[in-house]
Structure formats: C-alpha cells, structure tokens
Length: 154
Image (cartoon, rainbow, N blue to C red; front, top):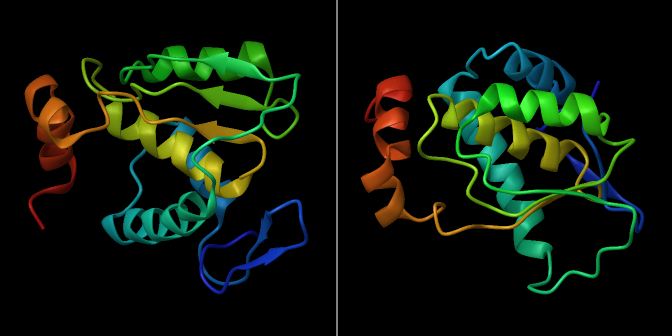
C-alpha cells in the first residue's frame, strides 16, 4: 500500500514509495466520491506535498505529451470529467496552470484531489500556483470561508 508516513523517495524518477497507515489510492478514491479527508489526513498530505514541492525547481522542463488544464476554480465535477476524458494519472501526464480554488462549491475537494495526485505521482502531475492560490484572493472569492465551513477554525 502507498502511504504518506515513513516515505522514501526512490531513484531518479522521484516516485514516492510509502509504508504506513495512510493509503494514497484510498484517498484518491474517497476524494473522487467528493468525500472529505479528515483534518489529520489533510495535515499529513500537506506536509508530504510541501516536501515534494520544495524540492522542485522554479523552472520546470516538461516533456510532451502533457495534458494542460487551468482555472479549475473549485468546479469539482468538471475536474473529474477532465480526468475521465484525458485519462487517468499516471497514464496521462497533467499540468494544472493554477486557479484551483474559489468560485465553485468544491474548492477544497478539487484542490485536495490535485494535491494527493501530486504526492502519489510527483513526476506525472504538475501544479503551478495561480493568483487564486494566495491568502488575499481566497479571502475575497470564497476558498477561505469554504475551509472554515468544512474544517473549522482549528
């Protein structure tokens, strides 16, 4: 089973091999059903994603073929349709050009699905931050409030 705890990054492919209690594939399936991860699962996911993203260079060389998508804006079911039509990761390499959140009703679920896909397949999912991935914009357009509604203030 793939897991977030006790992870080891193997080889030059940067593919994450995990052992422990959290199952990334289970999280992906859970999120695809628009179900929430627990707050502790989100904290673990964010910590692991941070480890991966901090190691990525500011400028990436992306080889074709790659499916490019942008402006998901919390449109969760459109994201699922994009993944259905484009093909599943890791079979399809994806580059998401930011603006993952705000405006739609499912920004939390959309972003967490993209984030867990990034952790599961770091070389096959590229996430580029857009202007909506900033504190100021999310407080105006809804992501901040959605996080508070779904996870509280802790």
